[in-house]
Amino acid sequence: MNPPFTGTILDLTYPFNEQTVYWPTNEPFHWKKTSWGPTQQGYWYASAVYSASEHGGTHMDAPIHFSESGWSLDEIPVGQLTGEAVLLDIRAQVDSNPDYTLQVDDIAQWEISYGPIPPKAIVLLFTGFGQYWPDKVRYLGSSTPEDPTTLHFPGFSAGAVTFLLTKREILGIGIDTASIDAGQSRDFPVHQILGRANLYALENVAQLGRLPPRGARVTALPMKIQGGSGGPVRIIATVP
Image (cartoon, rainbow, N blue to C red; front, side):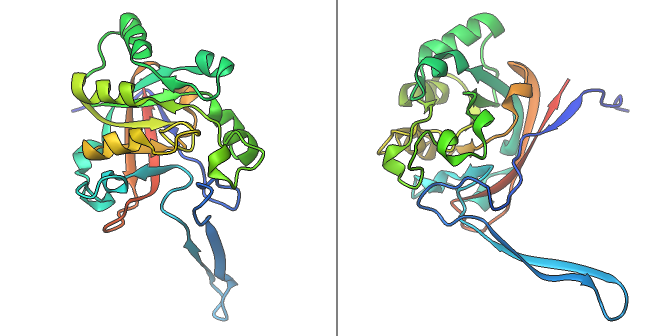
């Protein structure tokens, strides 16, 4: 018999509403009440309709997002949706350069302190940009957030992700910004590399500041959209 869980369960998901940040060129979240109140028979009944782009709010990018042969959202094996969280904190670098990208040396420094990244880990990049959610101007780093060419926020570098894929055994990556590629990226190399490796990404992850560098366990369950290139995801972390 397993002992009772004595840790903390955290929700790393932002709510979906009219303030939810979406990629500038994508359709935002819409929600409309269709029935909301007491019926003629005297009981309460509530229902609504919603629509949105796949890529906005706390969501998962499926491999097919940038790889024609990659898994769609519904094809990702459920066993790959949970793993040990590795938290890489680059807030100090971002403070002096909002366009900073994670470098292989940052990973090496983390491993000096905490040991090698364990197999089947989900690597989360803590940039500190979550503090700006849902202010689009600050979160996307632009006074014209509707123009994707003007965005400034940090991300992963192609070199760092290539290292994680070839030298470590990871399940996926995540970040507390709108994209795993930095805001000034034009060809999204990190998305391309990750997609070709048939791995997923988590974007707009909430509350990363509450996770330890390692030891927490993350589970990310996306809406199972058949053929989907991405979709809303509920992410929870269990912290010992």
